Amino acid sequence: MARKIIGRKREILQLENIAKSDKAELVAVYGRRRIGKTYLVKEFFNEKFDYYATGPRVPRHCPKPTRQHLHVQV
Image (cartoon, rainbow, N blue to C red; front, side, top):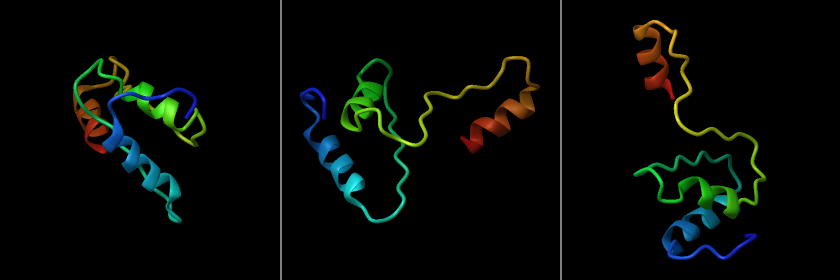
């Protein structure tokens, strides 16, 4: 970790266990907005990950059924 992350001992322990795993892992971090989810992941993994996405990025011009389908798959 580049900086000390304060108040996230449980989350850090979970991320450490996942990082040490011998198998492929998917981490989905969710919760209220503006509480440091993105910061936690970026700092913990020091921006060394294969894939990263935040929020559903569905173009507004997509038809509504397509948007709903994409949202369910994400």
